Length: 324
Ligand code: FAD
Image 1 (spheres, rainbow, N blue to C red):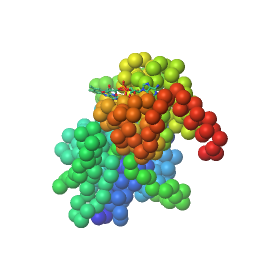
Image 2 (cartoon, protein in one colour):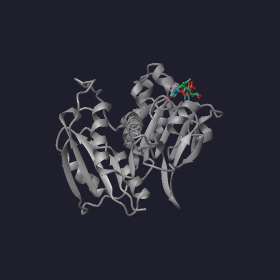
Image 3 (tube, rainbow, N blue to C red):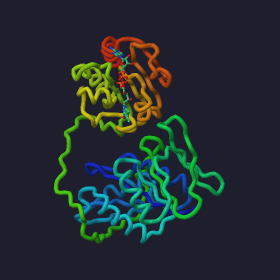
């Protein structure tokens, strides 16, 4: 299939989010010989990011520029992206299943009167069809979905489709468009960002997560120490957030973040279905729990039955001896 695929980039702190590279890889799977066109919305010149997209497999990148695109708003971004879609008439559109993707994609799909496959974790071409795999029932089962006609529009879950290798020798056209954006009903005056140290939870390759079993905010210290040694991030169950042990931005699960790190270490977490919904697709799961009957052991690749306050410091000390 040699079709044109539009990839909607996501930028945070002047950098492309990893899911943008993964979206390019998904687009290449859909269209092995077609043209992959990146779209970056910004208020300023992002040619450097466009080059990055090309190094990761995009053939061409369009920069949609307007002062109103400084901060994300679905109204402004929808208008800018619709301009790009109308000019390019792509066969397919791929973007990340992130907070922004979840907000933007249904709006775009309704404006385009198209279908939408959301939260795909894999895509393959089978005969005439492009088949997306997506988790259902909080990750307990998977379904295969196709769009039978019209525009193929999908969002992909971060950390599931491997990005293509970077090739800095790749070249491609980068074009800028000063896009017109009509008056917005909502204007964002200011964004107050939480200061977060260390690795971004949603993109972390290693996550050390704590639950009610951690017992207090101070109890999270050994988790932070282990996460630091492993170059990872700390996450939490809702019970731990509800109890005030940590901030809600760390919550993983059905009503929190969905993560798929290479390694997930669950400490003092029982394994409720709502928690599993946010982490069961992690590549390797290690569970530390003093209850041998805890549900989390049913999905863990490695289980340690014991007191997390004894196990974590030992694990951290041993890992410090290993060169990583
Ligand atoms: P618990 O179930 O209390 O488990 C604590 C575990 O710690 C136990 O297994 C215990 O054996 C172990 N433990 C205790 N002390 C130690 C020790 N010293 N060493 C080792 N192990 C120890 N939950 C989420 O996490 N994320 C969500 O997004 C989410 N969304 C929800 C949405 C809805 C609509 C509802 C109804 C619930 C949701 N929940 C969510 C809550 C969920 O149902 C569970 O209540 C919650 O996940 C339990 O958290 P927990 O495992 O930390 O606590």
